[in-house]
Image 1 (cartoon, rainbow, N blue to C red):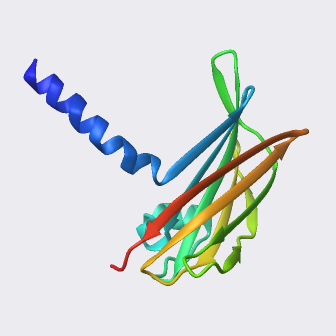
Image 2 (tube, rainbow, N blue to C red):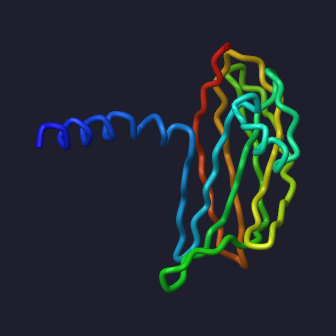
Length: 143
């Protein structure tokens, strides 16, 4: 019993750390998921899939729009725009490229960064007239 309580408390304590990196917004059956990370944290397989060359001064933004219907989830194409602002209030445009596989569609954007820094991201998407928007902060420490 004590072990289950300890595991539950540990999971609750770690939850804010996970949400600080990945954000979600919902409208009806649609969900917008956005995640920002330093490119050097990608596995070699992920870097190859996203066509990203890991570097200490490069970040990656991953965006997915999911439609939930009758117990199933499917990614859907969308018009997606992204940008960020750093601590010096400089605006960073993040061009996104669409990546399609047999079963999914997602968007990948690369941006320059100068660690240590904290960026405030704004990601907006539109799916057949349904707008979705998420804003979040992400810190990029020095290695």
